[in-house]
Image (cartoon, rainbow over all chains, first blue to last red):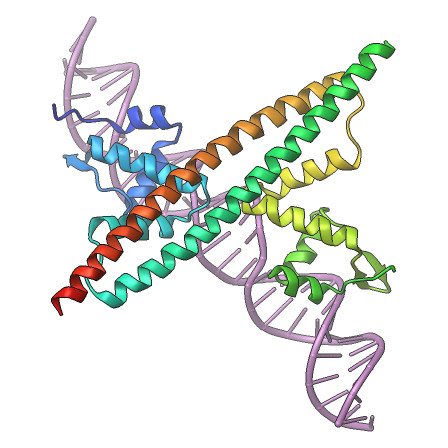
Length: 128
Length: 128
DNA sequence: TCCGGCATTGACCTACACGTAAGCGTAAGA
DNA sequence: TCTTACGCTTACGTGTAGGTCAATGCCGGA
């Protein structure tokens, strides 16, 4: 119960530096508690960090991630804001679908490269 | 036959700046011909630019892209190099699979966000 | 009490991927 | 001929996402 994570535990788990997690705090992405000046990360912080890193992997900028977190923390109540958000969601979805297609195409290409590598290796193997 | 593209044609088609294409040339990703100092892009250059931009969209750096292009231009002939390349290909493949999963998870989340937006909009619509 | 080790802060530094401005050449159309 | 548009180069500027370094705080163990 009430398990806390230290900053280095999390850096080890996620393969990032302490600098990175502190930077994320500076940027307002996470708000770990403090005992004195020492940061104490809860499970919720840990999950949030996971999501941040996932966002980064797929190319979201820090400010985009901050926006998304904001939406989760307090979703807009006004209709205009909601519609704006939905338009942004649509945009992002298109963007991600494009990226997924790019990735699939590239995976196919990698298959080709690998195959031609194998072919050449076989040729070399035969000729030596 | 022998249709050439001007730099601005391509920038319009791909939604990038002239600066970007010149930068790609500086970085050795493309080598358009010249008439005098003016760059003349062929269909092959155009296709290459497409691939470069795709690479960028999925998070390859310029130097990674340069490496890939290099491999296409002259594939390594030596067995050790081939095996090294195959290891890199494997790494990239894992990376891309992870990214694809990230994207799919995020797409699912976007669906959730959209739905709760719709729900709230309906609530608001009812209450006004 | 002293020490080693983890944490923190702030200041500065860095790589990448361009943007932007200045200044000039050139070619086509009014 | 004048203007407009496009293109070129050189050079400096910029935002992002951290890295690095130095000085310092704090705690538990010998």
